[in-house]
Image 1 (cartoon, rainbow, N blue to C red):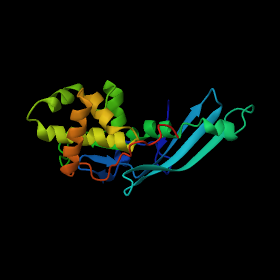
Image 2 (cartoon, rainbow, N blue to C red):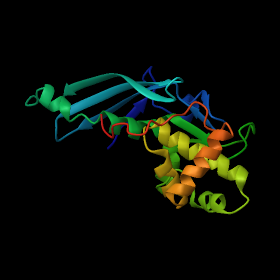
Image 3 (cartoon, rainbow, N blue to C red):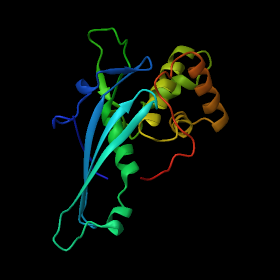
Image 4 (cartoon, helix red, strand yellow):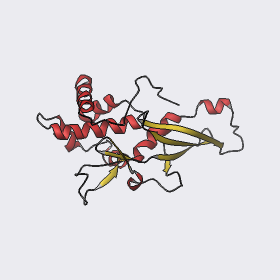
Length: 200
């Protein structure tokens, strides 16, 4: 799914727009709009979402739909198939910025979670994943768990599954590392509700 993500004032989203610190390693855009067109259905959908600190995730506050062809009517049947959650899950990583350098380093290179994903098809580089699973790499592990959990939770995806997949560890290990990161205060401002609907 191709999604055009923009700031609320209509500019293309970039890592510089992620100004709100969440956890200790992430910054996010406070709000965004995301638009996608389903050519087969003849429908364009735009969502407006904002970060809610109480919920610890992005919330969709508005959805707009318009027909892109004259033979399509916007009605209850066409709206039933609008993939709101999928749009959110595709858009959110473009609104999350992170650095693998020291955050207070003026030369730190920042990127979006989406750019990391598109570069290697994953959220974190393979070399970092290999370091994280080694014994004794606790600081790197906590940083990485925060990045993975935050990116997944803010996008409405299951964080334990993201940790499992990215680090190639069992569910139990992923869950344990997430609990330790939460206990260390690394997951402040991010929440994932188990059982949330997979699609809008």
